[in-house]
Amino acid sequence: MQEDSYFMNKQKKINFLIFKIKIILLIFIINGNFFFFQKNYNNETKIFEFSKNINIFKALEILRVHQFNFLLQKKVDLDYENINFSVIRRVSCRYCGLFSNYIVYLGCIRKYLIEGFVPILEFESYKNIINGFIVDLSKGNPWEYYFNQPFGYKYSDIKKHAKHIKYFDCKSNIIRPNEIIFLNKSFMNYWHIMANQYIPIKNEVIIESNKIFKKLFKGSRNILGVLLRGTDYVARKPHGHPIPPKTEDVINDLKLFDKKNRYDGVFLATEDNIIRQKIINSIGNKVKYLLNKNKILYNYAKKQLLAYSINFKKNIEFNKIYLLNIIIISKCLDLLAANTSGTIGVFILTEGFRNYKVYNLGYYK
Image (cartoon, rainbow, N blue to C red):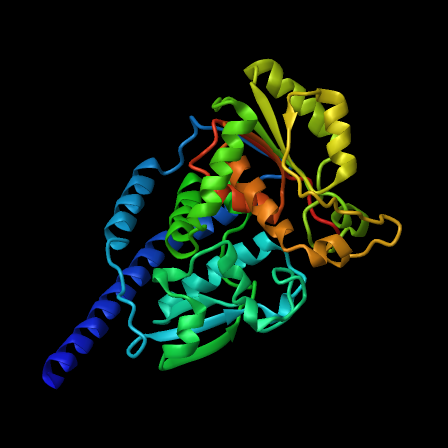
């Protein structure tokens, strides 16, 4: 019996080593084109606007997808004795939002997979925007309210049973999803598959988003998604962050898109009450949206971080509503969007847009 157990454990280690080697090889194939993507992005100065008819490196993209499909057939058993776990936290950025965390964590997952770990995301033991800045270990890991962990593990089980755990602070200065995703479908597919495999959204959240979409638009897919950022982003003008478009410019583009494509509806995702009302006043009943029952009350004069809003801090549902908004936007046929972490999240989740326009207006200095 002991001999059988020894060989079983050895085989698990071999399987995981093979899995790790395939991850590394695949990532090197993808990374070979990062310099081209970055050069391409830097040459764009005004706007990202593309049609589905533009397919860069289509043959290479198909090859990558097939490689991923082959790779993802390999699963690691729920083994707590022989697997090295990396518990990843982002203690250095407690006020970073849900999709800022989402895209940075994708980069960290990639990093620690290459290093031979099974990465586990943890928001339980320190104050952060996901737990409403309240540490309560009895409520479990808040990240797992919305997402599953890689390979089906749970943080609570890792704490109890895992023999080999290391803890890391997830930094943003790594290879991760960024604005290149607006320019290249291969890059988008890479992170789309990585996200589906390693940060899959809870099935109940996906089901809820489908029901909301169907209820709002009566089954039609001819919907324009609009994603805009306001409140503290506009008031504070944070250094190094993308400048959002003026609402009036978006309204003009929205009308042009609608005139050409005759949408059955417009889904608007924004946390800003002023932006929302302006668009509703200009477009009318065609505009649909999803809000939490408690409005975000933002004081533009104080210019505080949105995370300080009392409603935001005390209502964990805000993050769920935000996630539902991003999922619904990703299901729309066409898109108008500011350059934000949420928009990068949309491009990770989507299967692709027919037409889209992401505003590239530079960065706050």
